[in-house]
Image 1 (tube, rainbow, N blue to C red):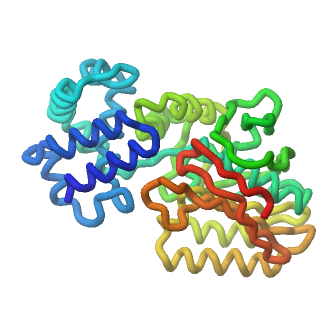
Image 2 (spheres, rainbow, N blue to C red):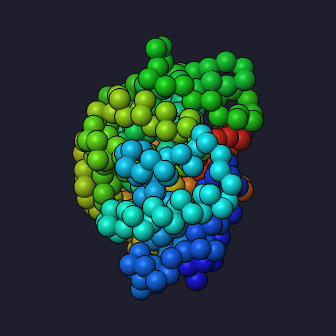
Image 3 (cartoon, rainbow, N blue to C red):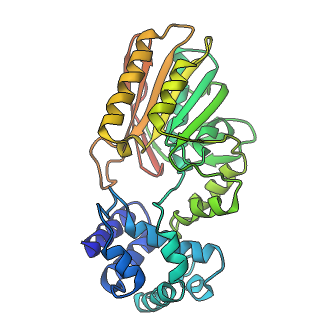
Length: 345
């Protein structure tokens, strides 16, 4: 089962543009040290260990990357990107690191992978711009599964598209997705107040938390690392540690007049228990039924609709109240590499 989880994750990472992760996880599938303390921990782990569950392969890969980023394993650094290594050299060096740094890695793998994929804002930003064409009001922004809150900062970003760019002057970062489709509306709404929730929020100003954010990025994708650090430099929202739906109920109740309440989440809803999804949807729809032109509600989501392998990406959907209008805006890669924009349909 563990070998299968490593292989499945290797295929997924390769498909998502990381041949190094495919190589690394393939090696771990074949040469995992089953008799080590790490091996015993993984062997006795209860529950789903694959990508839809505890993601043990990504946990250990993140721990190895953390050793590199922290300059704790010089030999490992020499075989990691941007360097290229033959399978035999990478295998021997990784197995040595698993042994030498076993205490560090055993501690690291106690927590699940956690990233804050900034490139998803390339889908959120045009979605928010569409919402603003319906309700020209300042935004009261709420994010579920916000992690470190980096995607709450999209009003500091710019998106470069084939026909031009949109965003802000002097952005903290520029997103450059592979864009397929017409230009979206180019005027972003003004964020008047922003907040987020996560079961395990990270503080990007804390070096240990920033290490976790960056270590779970893939070593041969330096753009993701650079964008995460750039977004972290402007992040200013303290993310609340709480149950997402309990927190959302409070936000829905306290949304102010003369503001559009925009709820956003990206690849997070699928991880909520089914009863939480049902309750959350009911709360949002009930708030939508109470919405008015001066207190509208927008629900912007980038979530899987059945594609678990990453080939088709996630669906970008916007629901608006009053009126309960649903717009299927297109699809985007789970990591924001590409956006297929359908327009305001």
